[in-house]
Image 1 (cartoon, rainbow, N blue to C red):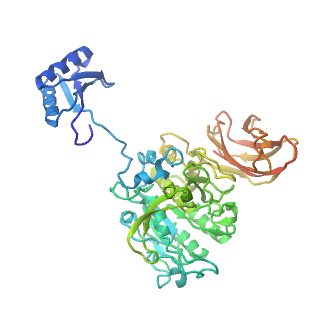
Image 2: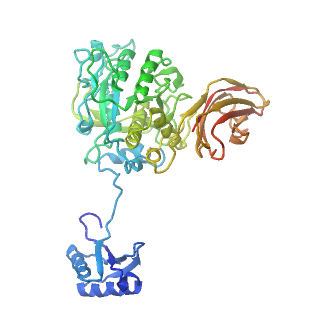
Image 3: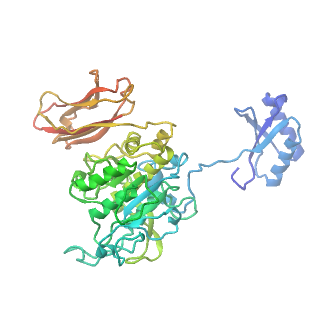
Length: 553
C-alpha cells in the first residue's frame, strides 16, 4: 500500500512446522477462516519465493478492517509474522515541482539517464568549481554553495566596483548598445553561472524547483566573466586556485574542487598558457569539463574546447541530434543535452536563474540552450563518478564517461565524440555494478592520404601497458575528411591480423567526412600490439585523408 493508505494485501510468514508453510491448500483455508473471523473476504494469492503466503484483502477495506485481519493472524501461534504488502516507488525520482520539465535528465530518447545513477550515488563529498559569472542567491541552490572567489581584476569588467575579492556574487553582466564592440546590441544580465550551477547541484527532494544532477555535491562559484566577457589571465588563475594551486595575493582555497566546469570560450586554438594551467589542474587530480562552443563550427578553432586534458562537450537537442548551434569535430569528447529553444522554449534546459534585467531581482527559473548547458551535465556526472569511486584519475573519469556512453539517437555531422553520455551506466561501471570503467586512450594524429579508387591505406597505433585482452566495448574514434564518404570501406585490424568491419561502402551516402566513434567487441584479441585503421576508397572521383583516430580501452 502507498504510505498512509490501507493495505490491499498481506504477506504472511508461517513457522516452519505449520502445514500452511508448505501447503497452498492449507494456507488458502487459513485465509478463508481468518477472514470469516474478521468479517472480511480473504483470498490466498500465491506462495512467495521466501515461502511466505500472499493474501489478498479484497476491496474497500478501512484501516480498522485491515488491523482486525492482522490481529487474527498475530493471534495464531503458527504465524511467524504478518506485514502489509507495501507499494514501493523508485527513491531516486525527486519531488521537485519542476522536475517533470527536465527532459534532459530522464527522457528515453535524449535524456542522460540520470535517475538510474541516483540509485547509486548523488555526489556527496565532491566540490565542483563553476568558473563563470559568479552566483546570484537562489533558495533552490544556496544549501549547496560553498566559498568561491571573484577573480576579475579589471574593475570595468567586474561591474561590482572593485577588483579581485573573496565575494563571487554576480552583480549582473548587462551591457548597453555598442558598449563591448561597435554594432553590438544592448543585452540584459545572463545570470549564466547560476544557471550552470543549478544543472550541476540544485538542491533536490525539497519540494520546489528543479533537480541537480549531483545534488549532494557542492558548488564553488569562481567569477571570471563580467561585462563583455572575461580574460584568459583571470581564467588561468581560477583554474589554478580551484584545483588547489597557489595564486599570488589570493588566500589558499579551502574548497578544492575535484571537478571544474567552464561553460565559456573564445575564438582561436588553445594557448600554451591556458593549456599549462589545465595540465597542472589535472595533475592535481581535478577533472576539467568545457563547452565545445556555439558557432556551429569545428571546435578545434576555439578555446578551451580545443585544449588537451579536458572533456569537451557538444550539445544535443531533444531528439538527440547535434543542436544547430553546437560546435563539433575530433576534439569533442562527448555529447550531452544542451537544448534547442528555437523548436519550443520547453526544449531548452531548465535551471535556476534571476529575473533582474540588470542587477539582481527575484529568483526564478528559465530555459536556456547552449553547449554552456551541455557541459554542466558532464560536470555533474563527473562529480557522481568521483563520489562513487574516489580513486579514479581525471583520465579514468573521462574514459568511463566515454566508454559507457550510448550511440546518438540522432545525427551529428562533423563529430560529437563518443556518443550521448549515460549517467546510470557510467556510475554503475565505476561502482563495480556493471558497464566498463574504460582506461587509456591511444591516439594517432599522423595524416594519411586516401587515394581515389585505389588500394587500402593503413594508419597504425602501438598499444602497450595493457593487461589481458581488449574489452568487449573497444571504442574506435575516427576522424576522416572525404568528399563522398559512401566510397569508403573502413576496417579495424587487430595485432594478429584479424579484421573488424567498421563501415561498408554505400553508393547512396553522399555526405562528407567520417567523424564518429565505433564500438567493437574485441574481447578475443590481445590488447597490446600494433592496431591499424585500414581505409579504402572503392569508387572514382573523390579523395580524402585520415586526420586522426584513437582507441579507448
